[in-house]
Image: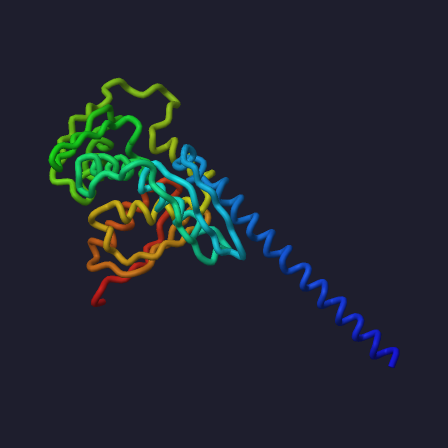
Length: 263
């Protein structure tokens, strides 16, 4: 009898410890998720001036607050969704002010600027973007003809852009010995970019390019190595996705496991 009572007491104690520890464990996970979001490269770089609140409850994250542009909503949502242990994201973020009409000149300027921001081998900061009736004009200074041509290519690939007038000038003076190019500086910076941010940047960049926006692509990142899955309509579309992803901030290499429809 005494032995039975002792066993029952042990069981009751163990059960109470489990009940106590489960909420604590869940709370630790939620705290870790919220901290990871706030400390991510995307939140500290792209969303640093936005007012975003991240709240996690048993791995279900709710985003509230405001962002300056629609791009911010996508980046915040995709970054949080890519954090380990996040089950789902409820995006309640609002865009400040009145959003420009789709395909309007103001809308195109925002889209082109955002698209340039995702890629390491162009300089969004040094590039001025103007738009008139669907024609986008690029001005500023490029470090090379290759950078100028790439900016032109990325701007032209934004949905709604009818034509691109590239008035950028190419820097004539030689670079000082030891000075790094924009691409080299971004390669160094990518060492500190977390995988969740890289995944978010890749997904959003693919959506912003007209040629890849409709591709059914999955994205996974492990220590900067991005693995692409899903389907492409043809081999050219598959190759283009890998090319665009390879130039996104934080990407060290690309493993393209996409399949081509009909093969």
